[in-house]
Image 1: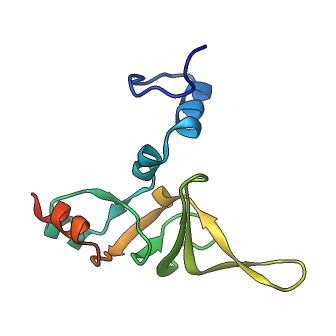
Image 2: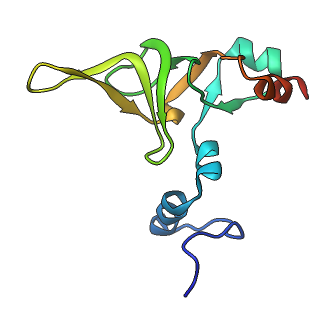
Image 3: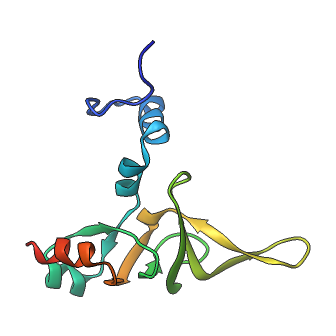
Length: 126
């Protein structure tokens, strides 16, 4: 039986194969799928176009019902590839509020959380 996910796979035009690759990828690869573009001033500062989103980053939502909303990333779900941002909430039928899941690619990073030494080193490399 063939393994469900392979690092040797490059690309396919078939959407079902693309979905299968993303769904069955291990968590260390799924982390890279949670990348978002950097704002123009951060691009100039670090010389990078995008970075994986982390908890504590300040982001701006670019697409969807919360478009132009700015908030901090409060939670990340690697298995579902979703980001939860403070202030982007939906109201449940019982009146309670719950954070709305958003794809990381639909956000733009405005401010980075540089508490992690490894992340700081990675940005200083280039």
